[in-house]
Length: 149
Ligand code: HEC
Image (cartoon, rainbow, N blue to C red; front, side):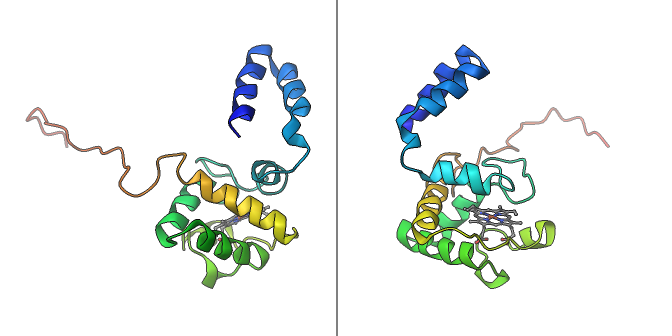
């Protein structure tokens, strides 16, 4: 939703009230898209980028799905089945997430909504640069020969 992003930029230059106006006036409000479902249903627990709220952030989750599944349709299919009835066995993203956050509750959404939001989650995997091989790389320092304890 490129145009939504740009309306946010316009909105923020107008201040908060301006942003609300631009968002509610957006034609995208007519047909719920993945981002809107995420914001109304998932963002209570999930942030998009770290730091986490009460669940693992979406971008790293999406990157793990991209590593695990060769195609978007396979990844989305698995994610939808997880969203309908989350279980430890179905977890792909981070096996430790459950110990840290507990198991996610099942989502009461239609199949169409689940597919839409899962597709949106998948798409976030390319946005944040968390994918395989894109690490920032630290630790190349030359050192100055002085050892600190
Ligand atoms: C009540 C809090 C809560 C809500 C609401 C919630 N989640 Fe989660 N979600 C969690 C927690 C906690 C985990 C980590 C533990 C787990 O995997 O069950 C998780 C994990 C996940 C995972 C990783 C699954 C895996 O394969 O490891 C995905 C994907 C996900 N959520 C998507 C969503 C989407 C999409 C929505 C909205 C439709 C949503 N969540 C709503 C709490 C929530």
